[in-house]
Image (tube, rainbow, N blue to C red; front, top):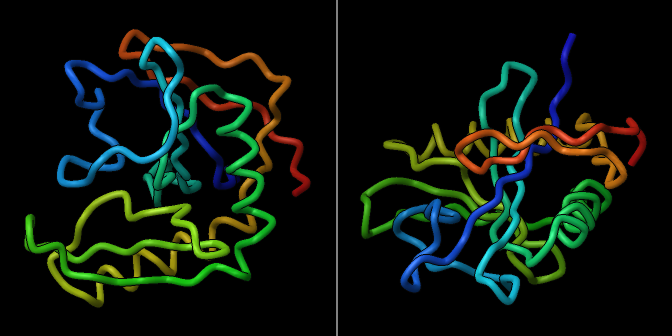
Length: 156
């Protein structure tokens, strides 16, 4: 059976806006980009390939992004969750902070608070089971600019 895994996404700033929108259309881009405006971020996909959550920020290169994913795996027990109603969209969202820094956000908004709580619980349950990303693997790049799965060592 497949296990949860981190997927890496590439993007760029176009006319001051991230493409793709990150972490979502109603939130501002957080983090650092490369000099050319490109960035990398992560998503956590469950065994069924559904996105469970994503990085709250972007990184200028893959190495820093992988380091953040590994830090989330190692620090998941120390995270603090926040559930909130997004007044722009009218949907419930969650955010995880690690050492008072946002590290992960909901993959999508939810109509009901209980659905949002369930989404968060699925993310929290999947992180310890996720394969630790292997920075030495060679990613596959699709036509849409998304970077595929990096190999996992299985150890955090």
